[in-house]
Image (cartoon, rainbow, N blue to C red):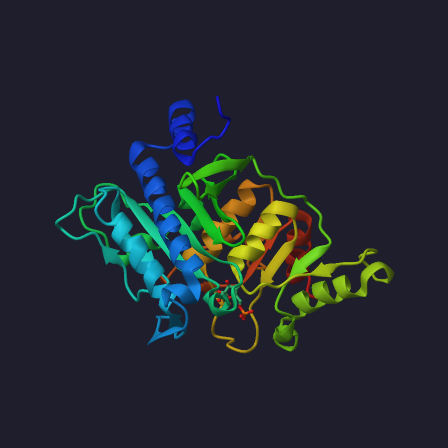
Length: 336
Ligand code: P6P
């Protein structure tokens, strides 16, 4: 028998063996995966599908929306609203939450997503992706409000992303390690290609946007400066640098071979905690990284312990190989 384990079989076995994937959550994950297949198709069409370029609008972040940002958002909404597994959804591309219309049954889960992360890379054919996070709605509540989404990342029941690159790969955790599924376009299904993913505790590769160096806080400047000093410096080894400007692609590399990713607070907009969004970028990615043996902090505390106060809250992010994240976090504790 083929050892090709489909996403469906993986989830059924996780549900049957470990029992920690209730049927509604299994349905949710399968629906999200199917939506990601649809987004992958649209992304792969590129110019041939007339989907490149901007949509002529801005999102709640004040960022110019690409046509594919809006297409991906609509695909996820339409795929998930009828299934009876959700109470509401939240998206980087929507100012407020999307409650499931009364014509559909309500479920017990909340789905949050960045429908197309890294969209500045769309028009230049560089990997982009969909990031998603799943929470449970508060017990015994009929309707759901925005405040019901404001749960710390340690309350997630599932998290993942789908990277649209040379392969389309779905990466998922339900709290029992990290599994990777590659899209078999001939079968039209996601096939298990990696499970129990583990990130090396050490690395020689960092990912940060170096053009912001003059704006960083001292601890980050110290950490990067030591990496740049290489063998002759205090780290005693040379480092390599990567920056794809697509968090999904940078995190996928780190899950695959280790590394440290940083988008720290900087002086450009001091009132903002960082550029990346807590609820649907940092939280799902941080859980995946921790489930793979890595670490994720905002320089001061574990990202998954941060209690959100706003749906589109931003956060400073340092995540990846455990020893590197612990080092840069320690520098924040002892800035001198
Ligand atoms: P910069 C993409 O817009 C994103 O939110 C992340 O995916 C990515 O890591 C970061 O912003 C890139 O930001 O300032 O380097 O363009």
